[in-house]
Length: 130
Length: 224
Image (cartoon, rainbow over all chains, first blue to last red; front, side, top):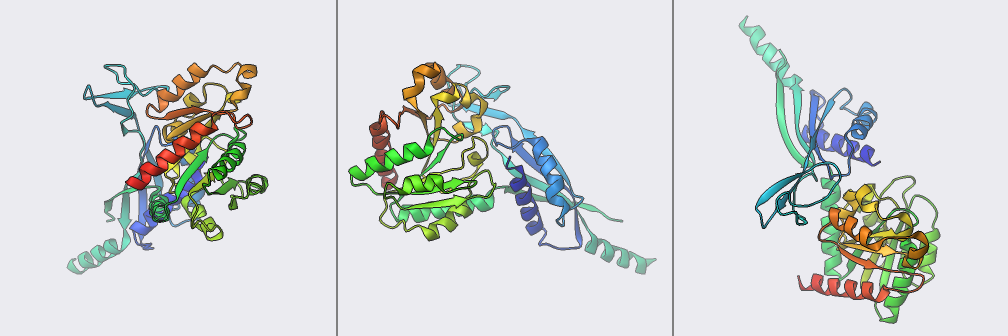
């Protein structure tokens, strides 16, 4: 339900990280969302279309990677992948485990940009050489 | 030709909220104020619990204030205000959760100096408020017996993000055929470390345990 706020947060953070430069075109934004982050991939992609439309990131593609839920049992020193319904138990001893090592992510990993300034400088330099 | 570049960002999507929440938490702790964020689905009894809780606390000479979040109306704030507690209503105008910025703004209208507890009644919603840190010291999730035993399994994110679960409206357990053991099992499946209390705010059952629990958590917090 709050995917629209999350989408506009992504726009703010990405715009800041390219210093709001007009001449940088962001092609792709790669993000990770955990199974226990409360965000649904499909809703985020849907909201992305709406939120990006009226921003500088119109046309940028959002690539969402879903992170599985993994817990760690201190006594067994073992990781367990939790599939299906959330039941935080160690796969080996069956005891409840609260240490979550993956699955809560809400991370903007990287962006792929096309820097037009650099590109035009490159063209100029090479045009001189020709 | 255009050459694509990869820029590493590695930033949390909620960093702005989390940054402000950390600042609020540090301000609260300087004022020895213990802040409780109360979350639940609509109608599980947050306001009734707060009314009874604040009245009981004031009998113990403990001062509490409240910030109440709702999409619209100030009905809940009026109920809490009637106890004499300093209360501020936030209307989110459709927004499904409270965030740290809304708390920050509402604090300008609430004199929280010399209060012992500040209760934040979040918007009734078991999904969205889970991700938003409000600078609270603890989060309490309410689950009324009328909602059935499987709310934690359906909304694991909210229960997992909470420190204390209050099973509310226990005076209705029998008519609702509520299976307490099953409910507790479901809660602990998604939140193994959570503490569980059972309360009937209407009958006053379990309120003292909650008060003792809050006071001891406040003391622990002050020792940190």
